[in-house]
Length: 65
Image (cartoon, rainbow, N blue to C red; front, side, top):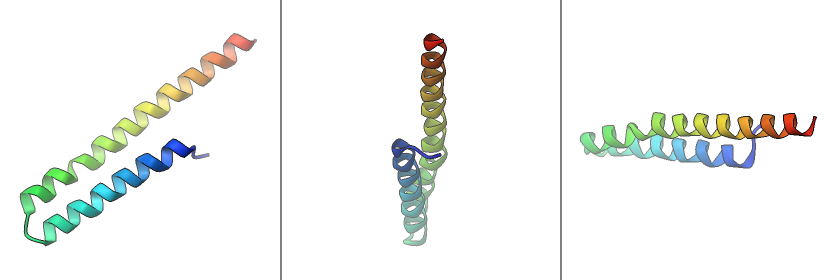
């Protein structure tokens, strides 16, 4: 179900989450919050890429018919 590109987005969002938690507990709370905002942004971008790829795939299937 997942494609290769999906794992890149999941890894990037997980790495951002881990970095955010690390910064928060190391005392840089402002930086932790800032990096934590990247997680939903990365996941939103992932959804946009998936929709674009699925739209292209559906368009290609319709052209073949």
